Image 1 (cartoon, rainbow, N blue to C red):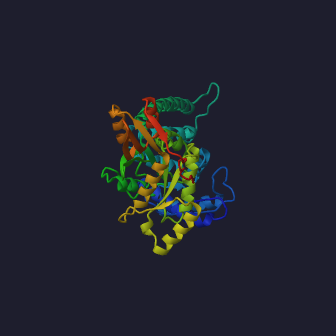
Image 2 (tube, one colour):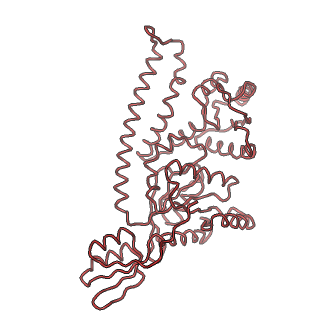
Image 3 (cartoon, rainbow, N blue to C red):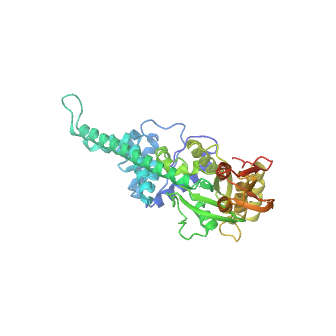
Length: 425
């Protein structure tokens, strides 16, 4: 059931939105048997839809033998309950459907905790709707019925469980912070984007790792996966695949996945992957930007990566490149299906890495073999020479390594020229 508010372009995008909802339903294991749409001036406060459309929905459900109604928009608890009472069929909204998909696809204990937390926070204000079979009992002083007693018990249990899950996830967040400290010297890039934009395919293509799960379906990846990528010329980057975003992503879900998405906060660069072949890629890009804003990541350096270029005709691909490059000159266009299709991304990552690591000269004494080894291990050595009794190494160095060398007594001289900043979108 799609019922967007009347606004410019709403009718044009409605079909694509319902196609996406149908894919979500398929991912959740449902079979779509009918579609109903209506454009609203404003939602009805009691039933979201008007009386005539509710009657039409009831007839369609009876005709198709449907056992579930899925709304593309979020319903209030009372709206969902009222529609169920009138139509006689279970009703879920888009947020509830996404939560159900996350619950079935969560694999790690962390992802399961995050999804459970989001589900409980979503369920809490809807408990009354779930206890409609006890409506005949009236509450009140002296006549408190078992329905109200059960509601109070459930609320208390859910609040206790929410508190416990938040404490456990806070502990997970602390552990992740320790892990990030251990790789602070590495250049880190996090892949973000709309679900099914091809983020996991890019990670597999860049690393060649066969253990990276790639599926042509929504939300194939819930847990972050980090792999090292050798970019050549002694340049290495830690690339992290993250959970995909989607239009109208439940805010409870975004909040519960904050611990997982801390990886993106610590990244030197965000790779915003866009499905270039999707007719609504601009809307999807804005959705991702909005979620990044909600997560406090709007100031992170971002590189736009247009994926699936192989699915466009030559003329469409050229037109897209000209249009995007005029607005975002550093955007790259890639394909995981074409030979050398990811080379532009590799070059962009090398450029970004070098921009964050200015060239410096390090003057060492012959006895400083340990420092020399550390420079070769964590830096990008360009050349080295002898000046009298001293060894001079010219290299690109991470900021933390420069600090350690200076503390150890080495003479570190950064070459003139400010680092080039990656343009944010």
